[in-house]
Length: 190
Image (tube, rainbow, N blue to C red):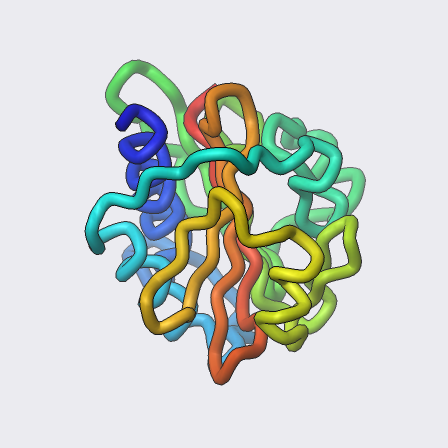
């Protein structure tokens, strides 16, 4: 049951990280048409009945988006992507962590205490180390990552693969018309 709670909490964190248009947000408007549908499907997965994940634990080397991983520093992101187009925060969270969101074309990166805790990528260049990218089919995702230990919405719009110690993180794929519309990575505060 602890795994289920972590996945639901992580999905809720992802939903919080993918909100757009909040007051104080400075963003160049380049959002893909699929962004809202992707957020909606991730929200339905988090709000739906609890899903107990058994078995699969994605290898950490495969749990990356655009060569970025949970735990990478702000400096790592700045080196790879340059300056953000927009930011949200910083915000002081319960427990003392400071969160910040950097916004780039097609990608949002959430930091806690200057380390990545979430990535949501919906741009055409979004890709995992296994070369799964935006526009790939749902069957390509499952052929690549398998079906064991997967949380999936009944309508097939989101699939989550747990990884990390105790399945504390998830790599998620959202779909529109059976095609990947967003790739997200979410971990708890480090």
